Image (cartoon, rainbow, N blue to C red; front, side, top):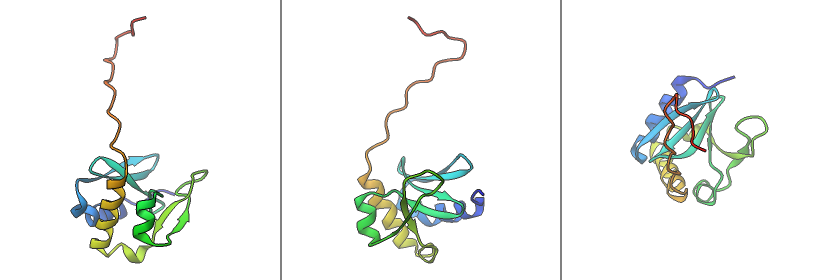
Length: 117
């Protein structure tokens, strides 16, 4: 069961003041990015945040659950917090700030070219 686009749009709007926020569809669910760093997932209309010390410190003692089958547990953001825009933006900022910068993308080969070697 996938997440509804309306849920993702609402959450992206709530996180908007945290920085450059965007959602990307992945395997029928969504990853949420802040300033180019993936910090959250929306799976089955539930919001999960990367389980790192910074997000745990901000959230206190968060519930943990796997966002999809066979995944390691992530922190679950309770729905009652979704309307607290300042709190959500703070969570996005501290989590994204603690993550390493994204790896540079490798240039794509043009179709029809054969690798040397």
